[in-house]
Image (cartoon, rainbow, N blue to C red; front, side, top):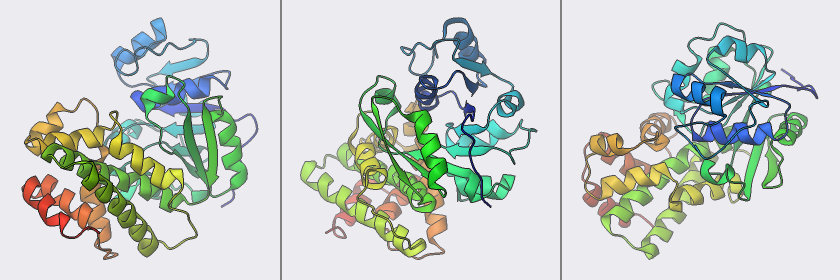
Amino acid sequence: MEYKIGKGARCAVIGHGSWATAIVGVLAANEAQVGWYVRNPEVLEQLLAEGRNPRYLSDVEFDRGRIAPSDDLDAVVRGADILVLACPSAYLKSFLEPLTEPLAGKFVISAIKGIVPGDYQTVVEYLHDRYGLSYGQLGLVTGPSHAEEVSRGRLSYLTVVCTDPDNARLIGEKFATPYIRLSYSTDLYGIEYAAILKNIYALSVGIAVGLGYGDNFLAVLIANGAREMTRFLEQSYPAERDTQASAYLGDLLVTCYSVYSRNRRLGLLIGRGFTVKSALSEMTMVAEGYFAADCIRHINARHGVEMPIAEMVYDVLYRGASARRRMKELTTKLI
């Protein structure tokens, strides 16, 4: 089904975490007003009163005339043509649960780098099946872009992914700022799965660091993670794609080494001896790799791709395997 975004399309963001807050800041630089669904009462109150999100990126101050925060999901959706989903994938269903307004006439962008737990689907796949949206009205905004740096205006590179390049360009105009460079792709499947897989590999890197492995090994581990990701994409959905591009490899690298990476942080705690349960309780934000490890293993049962790193992470997270023992075993399988 062909879907064309209109020139004057209005935008709204769903979610109130750090990435949602950073995205609203970017859009508000280009749009007269950005709709914003905020279901947390404390956050909503502060945004309306002071133009700040007290829980995430609290140093970011919004022009209150350019944002329209609301806890009425139907009203936010009704007032927008383009919806940007920026909540954790584990909470996507609960965020959308109050919705009665139809999505049929909307263009929906996922800025979520995670998989829908229990449904074993990417966000785009879930929206297609649950809400009957065509792939022509679904897109991604992704890339190596931690919210903390985007919100501070540090140079970042985003990739807009749509089946229609014209739609991608119109969306790109809304994200264009002096500190954001844009690229475009039509690889909805490959880029969304790459953004999910990189969280698993970042977890493995964190585990390795926590166990005391050095930079030499980490380079090998990440290189093998990149190869494993490419192998999964090529065998599960062959297409013309360059997995060395920033939306694939760049996103993997920044998630593996950045101090802002919550997935690396979760792995680090586990490598240092925390139980999985206690490590998760230490996290102040959702580590998407925890859910991705289970979902990717389930999905890969259909494809049979060799994924030793993803298997190691799954065994540690869900089977209670020793991180030290499983990492040592993994070292014999890397090249």
